[in-house]
Structure formats: structure tokens, C-alpha cells
Image 1 (spheres, each protein chain N blue to C red):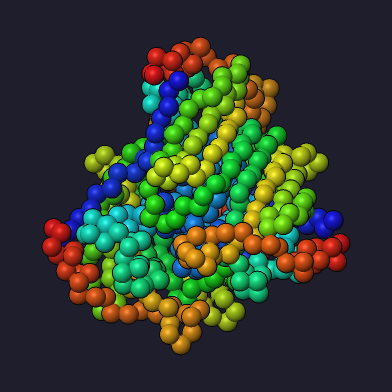
Image 2 (image 1 turned 45 degrees about the vertical axis):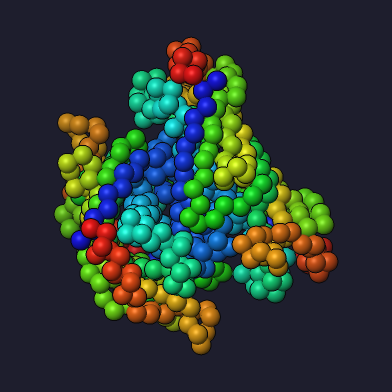
Length: 140
Length: 140
Length: 140
Length: 140
């Protein structure tokens, strides 16, 4: 299993008047971490979108637990991995560490998505190419 | 049970290159909706922080399901309510509707938080005042 | 000259650890205000993009002066107007008021932009349709 | 003159439906670059706030010119430097390069700010310590 580690500096603009990370910003961190995980597997998202003609890998379900706050100036490490491959969806797990402390834990379910052929305004799932999953196995 | 409805215009900057809401922005919507719910109960958050000397009502757990995408220019309605009062934490439920369609569903657990007396860098839970819960009952 | 007024609530997530609006958020406010100005002229941006086949009205130059800070919970009013129509570009002026106080002043130059026919990755200016400018005159 | 270079990956969430950076995000980039510039001079912002008991270095004036768009997946380089020291304010210049192309140019005027002694809700300028300016000279 490929685990990607990404270091993130908590910036001034990520924090709220309480001086801690404004929680929607954690989801932006995690979205960036999922992109970085694919890049670590040899699939930079901006190239992947073109290669496989997908519109993205939109979120269908996410669950986060915030165990300890992070503050402006903290350097945190996020460990990200694919925890499950489905047919047209997959799960990503993120663990955000502040030093040795697990500060945030997040699970995502995303879908391999294309524009609908019958309605360009709609987005629908499509089977994930074997090649994509194979890249994650060979990157470990 | 007080249910607050908030209309939100999906703005250009809320959307990603796929033309749909960038999902971390939904959490910003929901955070604003929780503030609006308290305001509807007679507790504008910026006054509540001063009245009760809390540092905020930070998130400890949130789970969202994205059932249908929203696009730039959509007007969505979010229905928000307190689904559970605990001793020092409480649950908020949000349902985001796009017309008749339930597009996003979200559950939050937040804590009634003060700065720790022993360590000003720390934040800790405190019992929610009865008065606060009473306001929600009398606002229905 | 059509002047559109938009009321904005300063939300928790708009503010930084100093408790005041994180200045990049003002630009998101102003971007929303420009969209609202066009909508007031009968040109909702999401429809305008389709009607005139433009990719957007991207910013080419913006200058803001921050005269007084705004805080979480403030309700501010932004007055927006087109200050100049060029051939393929136009200027927008925003004045953000906190009560009677002019708190932020901003000037924007935006371009009426289409995808380049020779290179779909490029964006280029195009003459603004007379019809568009006429809508602003007739809306006053 | 200390010039700090910061590499920034344009993330999915930084981009709008036109597929290019949503311009308010550039200001978040530049705010992070100003913090990185101070850190390069030996003054990490989160420590500087405590050492000099300032509330921040809020923006009073900023002017940006957007010369070329950046897209999702681009790696850009921002060169930042202090272009002028005033008594209680200072100017920062940012140049964002996409390869060899100068894509965005930005000028900032910021103030060395403390909470007012007479009114804790107010923020006011204070002379910049010589020590702070000296650090920039000795870091070149």
C-alpha cells in the first residue's frame, strides 16, 4: 500500500479568530493530499484528467474527526493512502499529525467521474481503469 | 425543534474547474449555517462569544454525504437544526437542497469551548449553559 | 450609472487570528459583488457565460485600499458600479461601507474573455457586445 | 536586498470554472509569500507576533496586475522582497513567474500593527523596530 506523506505549513489565512485552523481548510489540505498521493503513484491529477478524459474525482462521502487543534505556524504531516478500490469509486484515508500527535483523521469516498454523454451538465461514475490501480501497487 | 433555512447563492469562486462546488466550500457554507441557526435562536455568534466567554464552538467530528453536485449560479437552501444536546458538545444537522433534491447532508459535532485556565494555548470543553439550550426551545 | 448595493455578513471563516477580515476574502466579496452588479443589470453571470459564449470576465488589474478593518459579525454594504467601458475591457469600482465609514475601496479592470480559437488553453479578449453595455444604461 | 523565492503548486481548489487561478487565491499566495520572506530573514511570523507583541502586519493597500493566467497543476515561483521601509509601514513586492513569464505582479503596503491601548477593538500602527529591518539587511 502506497502511503504518501505531505508536509503542510499552517498559514495565517488558514486560521480563524480562535487562532486555530478553520476546519474547512483541513478539507482543502486533504484534497491537495489526495492529488499528491496520485502524483506519487505517477498520476499527476492535471495529466490524469486529460489521459483518462475524466472531469475529476469528486467527493461523495467524507468523515473527519478533529482530535487536536493546529495553530498558525505549525508544520503538520499528512499521511494519505487508498484504503479501498471499488468499481467506480475508491476510499482515501488521511491522518494529520502534529509532531507525534494524531490531530485529524479523515476518510473520503470519491468517484471516478466523467461527463454524462446524454447530458453534459451531469457527471457520472465510470469503472476505474486497471492501469490506474496497478500504478499504486507498483509504486510501493 | 428550531429549523433554520438559509438561502445560499453558489458563487463563481465556490466552484472548481469541473464547474461544481469545490467540496471544502460546502463546509464553509455549513459553518455559516450553524452561526445563522444560533442567530435565529437569539444568539448571534459574535455576541455569544462575548456573553459566555467562549473561544468558539469548534468542530470535533463532521460527516458529509454529497448526493448531487451544485453548479455556479445555483441557489440552494440549507435547513439546519440541533439534533442533540450533550453536556459540553452538541450535534448539528444540515440538509442542503437544490430545488426539491437533497444534494448534501451533513452532521456536525461541536464543542462549547473555552481557553484552558492552566494553558492559554489549549482549548477545552465546558458545560453548555441551560440558558443557551432554552433559547432554542423557546424559538420554535 | 447603475450602482448595486450588496449587504455582506462578515463570517467567522472570513476572519484571521487578529479577528479581522483576512484581506484575500475581500476580493472574493468584490468578485461576488461584480457578479451581483451584472445580475442587477439583467445579466446573471452564469447565464451571461452561455449567452455570449465567454469563458468569464477575468481580472487583469485590481487595486484596493483598506481604510478600516471589519470584524466577525459585522454587516457591511458594498456599492458597486461600472466606472468605465473599454472595447474589450471594463472597470468596476467597489466601495465597502461599515455603517457610514468607507472601509475598503477597490478598482478592478476585467476583460470580456473567450477561449482562443487557435489554442483552447489560451484566453483572449473580445469586444464587449453593445447589448451588454445597453443593459446597464437601461437599468438605472 | 533580500529576495525570497517560493515555489507554489496551483491546486485544484485554487482554480475556478474557467480552469485558471481564482484571483483572490493569488492574494492568499502573496500573503503566504510575505510570511515566508520574514521567515527567510529569521523572523517566522508566528514567533514575530509574540516577540514584538504585534497583532499582525495587516494590508493597507495592494495593487496587482495579472499578465498571464495560471492553470491547475502549474508550478509557479514567487519572488518577494521589501521594496520600502517606512516608519510604521512597509512595502512588499511580489513577482509570480510561470516558467520565464512574469504572470502576476503585486505591490503591498502593510502596517506594523498593535492593539490600541485605549480601545482593544482597534488596531493601530507602531514604529517598526530597527532590529527587524536590520535582520533583512544581514540576511542578504
